[in-house]
Length: 403
Ligand code: HSE
Image 1 (cartoon, rainbow, N blue to C red):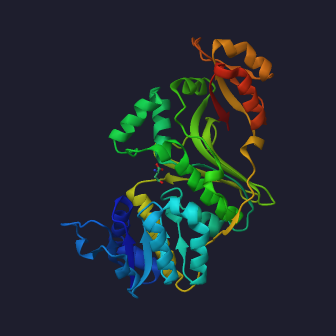
Image 2: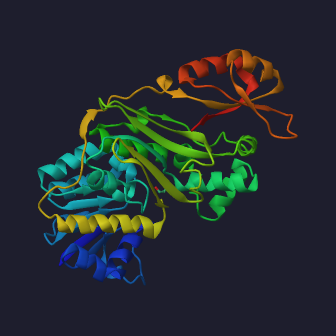
Image 3: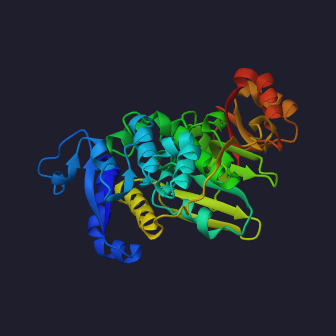
């Protein structure tokens, strides 16, 4: 019998306990041994909860209990989660986490500790919720050179953009509704500003390059500037708008990664990934394209991924199987050098000037619309595009990259 401790009894933590206990037979059969939750660490008590007798308030109880071989860290944030994870790994206890902030920030260090103490630091749930993207990259696509990953990695923003497209509503109205329905956090900053997706693509890029990709050094744009007008033009061009996290890896392992809204043709494999779903397109030099799609957030999908990591840890006691990356910084290709095409929406004043600044741009027309004008530019380096936009000044109302 393997005994597990769960750190944090919030949405994901209670989900992990539920998955392990409800699927006890499947989990035990696949792990080769029965698994049960012995401790739940939380500051609060949970009177009336079926697992209230397992709640403890002191992490040392878990750390000092030799029966605990696996710890699920689902507290979120860096502070105590970082300390507890380090202590557990130093003590030879494997840790399974959904904490993308911690993995993105301290993944290299924590994985190195796990390797030294012959256990595992597993983080399947940190990217794509219940979608097995980490396992796919770590143990399935191991004979390919992965050239690119393109993902919708944030459920909240995908929900908002989907509603904006379907209802013609503006960003602020949909965000307010998403908060009322509990889809968006009260403080949605990390989601809508693209930071959450930035951490997730940094984790994938680190895993693929074997070096640390610091999400703070990436070019990250959120969805707050996207308007109903942009969707009107996207629709006219048979496109939609999605927040994409993109990473492209060169043969020398230098990497370009970014998060930004993109206008995608309706035929793009990610164009039909809607609502809170996530979708991830992986491009390998032998495989070509593969698409993973599913529940990218939420209690049970995320908990399912954490519990799958628990099974993997149980199967691999005493040996480190998890792919890792070094603390050494990856060689990042600057966003200014990336070649892109853009949709640009300009005022009447910018209509003629745009053709002069970006010759060869093609107009996009929304029948009956005269208050602004849309264009698709040709391909150019991002720094050239920004210089051109500088010349157009206030005439530029919005710009969205094309995929
Ligand atoms: N806030 C995140 C999202 C949760 O909306 O996708 C899952 O990481």
